[in-house]
Every structure is written in structure tokens, then in C-alpha cells.
Image (cartoon, rainbow, N blue to C red; front, side, top):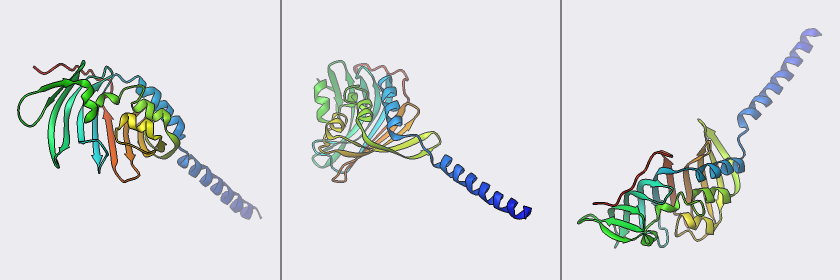
Length: 216
């Protein structure tokens, strides 16, 4: 009788241990908590390196990809590829003060009002606390953690149209989104529009000094 009891007891313990282990492995941080923490953290970010990639057609947006450095004062410098007359043209830009310095494939820099940056893409929106990534993260709905790997959590959520459009012009509907966060930082945001276009924003090098000066 004892060996049988021992066997039954061992099976019960194995089942309990299995359930506990599965539950521990499967338990993940709650999506809303992760996004709230990242939203608060991104409000304190003073600078970042960013890349933006647009796959598909985004109404009213000519930029196809861009990369640069940005500080919380809204100053930025980098390069972008824009679509013009059916062709991709690579340009350099410097956004500082009230001016946008813009250089095409030929010639030197042209100075324009900084407000015109929004006609292509305004990178200063990324760290803007009222319309940038912090606002997007804080306004996301139905957040759900789908994976956690090596400290990076992937959270799926829906971002309201008006909120998403503040960060990415051309978004005209609530947008399905995927956020990759580590601690209190957003590493990547992917917005998939109902029509199929996709916008990916990658962020790195947080709080490294970024000084932007007008081109000579």
C-alpha cells in the first residue's frame, strides 16, 4: 500500500509542480502597466537616435525613411529619403531654432521656416510630451503583452486616430500598434494601418548629448 501511496503522491506533486512552472513561465507583465511605465519614462528622455521607415502609402506623407539625432528642445539633424515625382531622393536636414536647413542631392543647404518640416516629417514630434511617443503610449487602449524576451516586452494595443496622427501624419483611423519596451524606454513602435501601410519607429542612444548647429 505504501509504495502505491508514494506513487500517487509523486504524481500529484509532479502535476502541481508542472502547473506552477507553466504558470510562472506564462505569467507576463501586464500590458497597461508596461506602457504606463514607458510613457512616464519617455517624458524624461532628453535625446535619442531615431529611425523611421514607411512601408506602403501613407496619405500626405512623402518620407519613406529617415534617420537622425534629436533632443528634447526639438532640434534635430539627419537624413531622409522622400518620394518626389515617383522617385526617391535622399536629403540632409538640420532643424534648429525656427529654421529648417534642407539639402538635396545637389547644391548647398536651403533655409526654410521650421514649420515646413511637417510637410515632410517633423522629427521633433517624437519627444514632444503632448503629441509624441509618451502621449501615444499613455493613450493606447486594450494593451496586451504578447511576449517577453531578454528583458524586452512586446505589447500590442490600439492607438486612437487623433493621437497617432500627432506622431505620424497621414494616419486617419484608429491604428493597430506593437510596442517593444525595456524598463521605462520605448525601443520600437510599429503602426499598421487598416489599408496595409506600416510605419516603424526605432529609438536608441537615450540621453546622449545631442547638439545641433546651423550648417555653415
